[in-house]
Structures are given as C-alpha cells and as structure tokens.
Image (cartoon, rainbow, N blue to C red):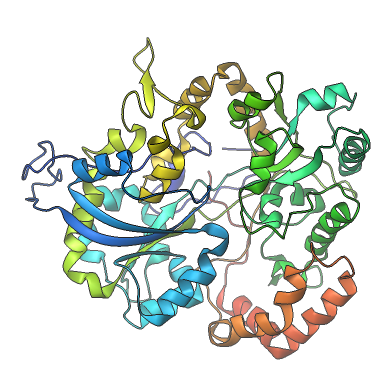
Length: 531
C-alpha cells in the first residue's frame, strides 16, 4: 500500500483492507432493551435468548485523563440499551502494567481484565496456569466477535494446542505519531518549518529565547520516548528489535542499538538545555503535555495531531497547527514512522467468571451487529449530529456535555473490528465536526509522508524466551530499570554509564535472553503488516 513496504500477507486477509488511518474512536459499545431472541431491539443478533441485566466487573487502562465517574448519563444509557450492569475500574495507562500485574498475581481479579495477552511472559504464564477461560467454542458461537479480528491475529493468540484465551484490542499497524507545531508562533518568530534534526533544534532554541515564556517542546499522552517514536526514526531507531550491526543474521533489542541510545540521550540533551518539557519523565499524568499544548503553553508536541485546535482556540483564537514532515537525521537518516504490531493489549475473562462467559459474549456480539451504530456514533445530539447529507458528524469533545465526553466513554470500550481502524471517511467526518474540514486532505497527505518510510520491529511478539519468562523482569529491575528510567531525570547519566549497567544485565542473563529469541525465531526478516 505504501512505497518501501514489503508485501507480507497474513492468513485471513488482515491486509486486504484498502484505506489507512488512525481512527480516533468516538464511543463505547451497547445494545438495547429486554426483548429476547432474533434481531429485535435488545436481542443478540444470533437467535439466542437474552435475559438480564448481565452483570460483570471490568478493569482497563485509559489513555486520556482519568476523570471517569460512575453513574453518568452515557453509562446509564449504555447499560439500558445493552441490558448490562458493568462494574468498571480504570487505571491510567502509564500506571496500568505495574498495578494490574500486582492485582493479577494476587488472584483477586475482576471478571474481565485488560492485559498484553500471550505476547507477554507474565500474562502467558497466568494463561498457562489456568487463570483464564478458553474461548474457542465461544468464537464459533458468536461469529461477529470472531470475524472482528483477522484470522492471522487469532493464530498469533493461539497456544501450541490451538487454544485461545485472549481477545486482542486491534490497532492499525501504521500509527504516525506526528510532530505537531504552532504554525502561528513559527510565523511570528520567522521560523521556517524544520526539515532536519539540526534545524529542529535551532527552532526550539529560538522559541526558548523569544521571551514568549512558552515550552518549546512537549509530548502527547504516553511516556516520552514512545511519544517520540517517529522523531526517533530520524536517528535510525526502530524502537524495537533490529538486525545487529556486528552480525546482521541476528536481531537485538533496542537497548543494544547505538541508534536508539543516540535518540534517548538526544532528548536528554534537549531537556538539559531547557528545550524539552521539564515535566517529561517526571509527571505521572500522561496528559500533561497535551494539556499544555491545548492551553497555548507549548509550541511543539511529539505525538500530536490537528484535533487539539478546538480547545487551543479557546485560549488562542488565532492559533493554527501544522504537522512537520519527517525530519532528516544527523547522518542523513530518513525519518518516517515506527510501524506497530496490530494489537495493543486486549482482554481475558477470569476463569472464576466462567458462568458469565456466554453473557459477556452475547454483549460483545450484539455490540458488533445491531449495536454497531450506537457503539460507533453514540447518541444524536449528544455525541454526533446529522449533516445535510445524512452523515453522522462527531461533536468535538470540548463541545459535549460532561457525561458524554471521551473520558466518560473510553472506559466502556471493548472491541472494534479491524475494518473500522482504516476508515478515511470517518476521519473526514471527525474533521468536519471539529470545524477544520479544509485540513483533512493536508492531514491525509502528511499521514502518507510518514507512512512512506516504515521502521519495523523485527521481533515476532509471540516468540518468548524461557529465560526471560523466568528471570527477565528481575534482572531488568536489578540492572537496567534505574538507568533506563533516569535518562530524562538524571543529567549526569551518560551513555557510558548506561552501557556499564547494560553489560551487567547481559552477564546476568540478558545475553541468554537475546540468544534464545534468535534461536526460537527462525524468520528474522523485516515484518510487514500491510500489503
């Protein structure tokens, strides 16, 4: 689909899809009524009877601000329509893995639990120990759930017996994390749009020296280095496993790659110089950077978009946002986008909730059939309007009533089919809703610029090292966690000190982990999830 992307087709046709985009999902899923059977309002669309309300507990991460409160109007409407009663717990994404692993290890898990699935050693071990319900038969009984996920991804979720326990949360593999900037500020300071890393640094310095009192560079709603994954490509890093420079027949993790360290310590240098947000790597609230950008207190954001303009113009009526083209690196590296595996977490069903599994699948199946319209668009006048052409146009989050904002809806999301992750028409409607319809073609062209130069993680996420499963987290904590987590907070930390810690990690078992991955993964060619 894009130049530079090799063709590698997965079983099941994941990659026969014809459009590319990161669809900003609008709302959660639901169904309606207490009728039974058939496809009547309130039925499951599969001929099964329904009674209820169905009740289950649910925990998941949230990427936006953690302002969800139970009992809101949207939640009540969902529960009424879906004939469910869900006890929801949310955890900010930056804290989720550590918090939920402690919960899971204690055995005190909710009925439905978000996790990384069998691609993660911790979750795979729990799965193998019988902590979760096997769902093969339910996938056969509820075809809408099964067909929402391409066969190739189901194959990746299956164990060596072909058993599946995990429902993956799908993402489209091309997810550009744009470098967005305040075009009005650049114009005011007579700064041309940068095309290289050096020009980018110079632009940030001019902003710092301008006297405007604005943060030159911040980042979006995730950890700093992942928010900067695409500017990292301008240093040649995949932010994942890649062929070793010493032996290209082997792959090594990012910690072993000079390009990756160059990128991380470059961000450290920017922060030392006051060019990168002083809260980066410090503030546990993942949304702090976007909050600053939308409030007019930051000039450039890693991992941004154009949709921040609505709230930005409340404080800066004449503000404008643009997207920088991928930057050329210090040694001529061509920037692009870090391509991702088409799964970002997902959910298990607790084996202790096995008596609720059929009800949970009825709920999911309905949300993907008769409930699709509500799941995608929500409630007319609250989350969308209908334009003269009959199209459902999302209401910008900033203009919604409190009970219908994204923070009230995201915690209620479960499963969206892969086909909805690549819908340019829906993306255009989002731009219409925000009031920047004239920017859609520009956005799409910038998406294609980033996608034209993909950087892939060479490691198959389903390949797991036995040594890593046994001691990996511990030796990482013992030798690497402090240095890797301190790059943006300890300005005395150097690459040399980092490499010394890395050697201790290698000697303690890290090298064995790398060797086992290379032994177990026979195909080390560059993956590609798009035709």
